[in-house]
Length: 181
Image: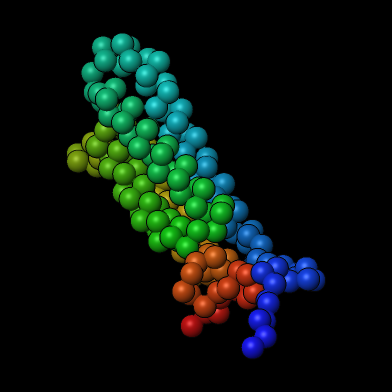
C-alpha cells in the first residue's frame, strides 16, 4: 500500500475572497451625527455640573446629582449608540428606537416639570406647565422622530445593518449582503 501524502499547505497561494460591504447610507451618517451632538451636549452637562457643584447645590430647584447623573447616563448611552450606528451593528436600529423614544420622553418630562418657564400671557395651569417655545420644541421632536423612523425603515439601511450579522442571510466572506424578506 502506498502512503499517500497530502500537503498541509497548498502549493499555490489561494486568493482571499474580497469582502464587498454596503457603504454607510447618508441618512445613517446624519442619524449618528445627531446622536453624537446629543451625547456631546450631555457630556457638557455632566462636566459643568461637576465643575459648578457648590453653586448648583446652593440654588433652589434641581439637584446637581440629577444634572450629573442624567448627563453621564445620556453621554454613555449616546456614545455606545453612536458607535453601533457608525459600525453598522445589527442591534443598533432597535437600540436607536428605544433610546430616541426614551430621550424624547426624558426631554419633555424635564422640560415640563423641572424647568422654571412661565408662558407669557398664559393663565392658570397652562402657565405652570408649558414653556414659551413649546411649539418649536414639539416640532423638532416630531421631525427628529420621523427622520429616525424613515431612516431605519429604508431598504439600504436595513441591508447596511444586516450585512455583518450572522444568521440573517448575509455572508461577509463571500461578499453577499443580506436580502430583505
